[in-house]
Length: 259
Image (tube, rainbow, N blue to C red; front, side, top):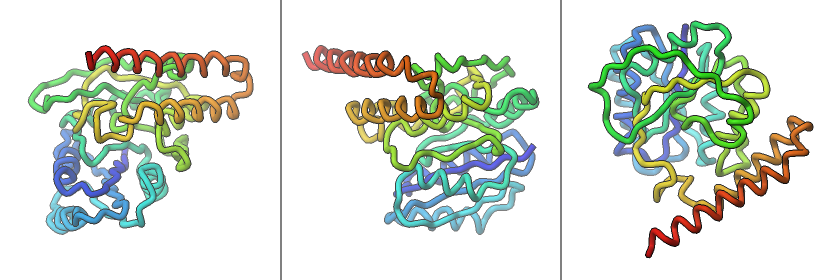
């Protein structure tokens, strides 16, 4: 079972080596393909990847693609086009994988019914912790519609069902893609924290930090998915109200946090 790992990179001089090494150091010993897509970085991070390629003595291929700056969706889409693996996985340049990540996820994917899976994450380094295989949980389309079930660096998809990210969206573009894929196949979740995030979700500095932009992205996501599944149009007003209710909750929470 071969797999391509797509790592978007933009001014990631301080973190890219750790991200790539977390893939190289996987307990899964089969050959894999690591595709680092440089989105017009200006800090010289591509030189770090070039050095890793030159010194690579493992059975894990490292490939660097340089492209003009176009945003994270364009980067991931380029990686998907270049990928040769049967499966595609995503990792961000400031995150890292637990050493058992591929071993455990690919074991779950031996079930041919599972073509799309995500798993849990943590904010701490848990690399010394030993995990045991768990039974994946099926996520209903309705549940996924109301809440993104996993962060992007935890997702693994069979390439022949994978689609492209909507490059016109700057927020919730990952959730929107998962919903489109979920129209074609069941969604599964592995309840293991196999990705360490470099920053908390919704933290300052991340794309998801702008909560109003997140809401606008979410509304666009609902509009797109209704376009793909017409029967959902009856639920569109509820989805809009649900999104605004979440935004109001965030405003109230932030207000009292400042008190």
